[in-house]
Length: 106
Image (cartoon, rainbow, N blue to C red; front, side, top):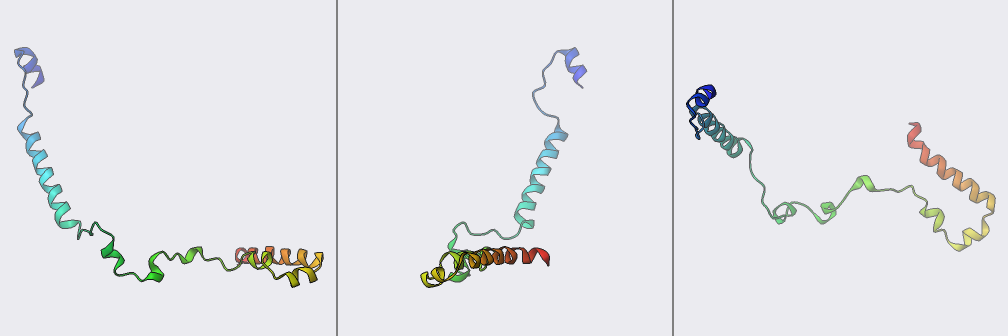
């Protein structure tokens, strides 16, 4: 078809009818898929989703909970810090290290 156009020196500015029909059919199928297969749309505002959540679960991330940390060693009362010797401090820090490694051994 292009060789004929070159020979006759005519410019065809329109697309072939089969390409136009395929494009329109693809557009119609895409619109149908978006409207009927995608499901229900969610509301734009967050209040509709927050209605179902309680305050406890709003920004609650249990995977970040850490109960075995060094806070109990760092924030001991002054009585226990003064009475413990340097050897006790070394043994408690090694006990903390072993407690950290316990989940890895399982």
